[in-house]
Image 1: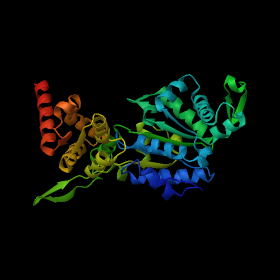
Image 2: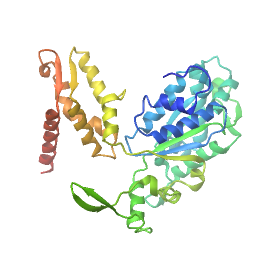
Image 3: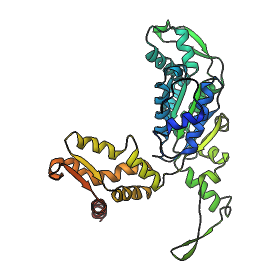
Image 4: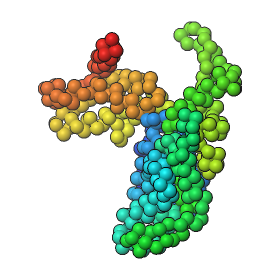
Length: 369
């Protein structure tokens, strides 16, 4: 689906994003609403996304960028930049974090519109930009119980941009080097991070910490056996205070209208990513073999076996798929013609997957011994 005219609705935006992002329906819907509001000219509350590695945070940001860039009618909202939070921290230590970010927006607008675009137009594009801050958890105000100066300054710099209608900025020399005032209130910030350790900290709080006993065991019947089990979900138990203790300042957190938690990917989501994802390791490998005149096939059971193995590593998410598939496919990629059948096919079944995984475990056991 391609949006061709008019301001797209949240449903249209979500449908577009779902072509790239599998699962994470809540995050997609939240971003779709924010983008739809922004495209109508409204000031939009910023979004903070929290999710384990490999759950699709970066893929979602790429999907938004591609969607906006593909539609000329959305030009003013297509001024998108991505920046790593650590870069903001480094620039904040030099006192230029906010300035550096605005200059990136202006440079991005110039690349899109051409060197002949007026400075006024570039400033307008910058003031309506969309900024993706990746790994925002890396600018914590506290690390190991000690103040983190670069994190404090980076959060303060973002706060200045988020809430300020007159940010002074010295333009580059190619724009005469003049100092102008930029209204940054219309910039939409989407900050994402894995927040490693947050899950364990909240779990400890409700099981052994100050809220001990809050998480009650539930009775589970499986294979005719009855047992009690603690079923913990970060979404259900996360409080603002947990983020404050992690190192997100109250002032910084208050500037986000939505805090979205991404789910760990289950077996079914991982199977869809592996077999249907546009950038899946399977598709990339199939393209490699196709260029050699070889057709690579995996049986449905083999694909599911790989997805099931990846689901046992929830903190790696989709990245686990690539690592597991690499163990299976590497011998075939190393010697394509030697491993292909006479009809030019390579067919991998579940037995082959199991052999590869068993060999990997044996190798690890030998190294550990």
